[in-house]
Amino acid sequence: MTRESESERLAPVVPLFGGAAPAVPPKAETADSADADAVAAGWHTTWREEVRASERADLDAGEDAEAIDRAERRLSRSIATRSISEREARDRLRRDGVSGAAVDDIIDRLVRAGAIDDGRVAEEAVHAALTRKNQGRRAVRQALTKRGLAREAIDAALAEMPDDDAERALEFARGKAASLVRHDHDTALRRLVGQLGRRGYGGALALSVANQALDEARRGTGGVRFT
Image (tube, rainbow, N blue to C red):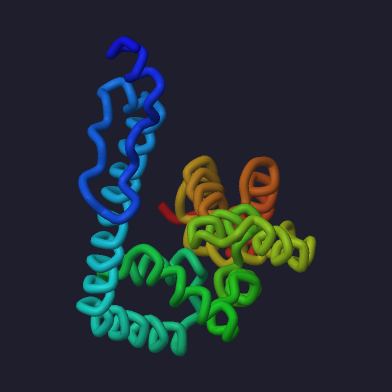
């Protein structure tokens, strides 16, 4: 029996009770095992980075807890004196240095408690526009949009407004016309139409009520015009 045939018949020796493991031939390390090692190494690195990031976030949250609490108390005091929209509340918190999940957490608590209610803000704004500012529908919509209210809240509030823009526009124009009749008609008309436009009454409506209010004011002074 040749030496070559003996090597073919002998099985590999595997140690059962310790001892050095036989050397692994280079070809035994397959591409699959190399890929598995790389994936394991990558997962380990990623996991360690995630842990470090979590630890940093917890540390930052602990360091900022007092500042966040102060910002929330300031916001609560503001809400107690004047209703504000959700967007206005978020803006205030960010100006006070609160950001990220802390802002969402504070806003969520205040909304659930009823302290922040965009629908109520819209209703109060409409009431003020009708009773104190004599504003038209267009001006009210612009004011509500500027405050960052949701479109649903704006539409619901405007739907409750009485359809009397013409009456309110004429009432406003009559209050301003007396101080304008000293000007020539074109100048007085231009100024009054401009004032009506800033109150949310534009176009043909503003022109019509301005002419009517100026005519009434001149008749009330006996047609006397001052220059």
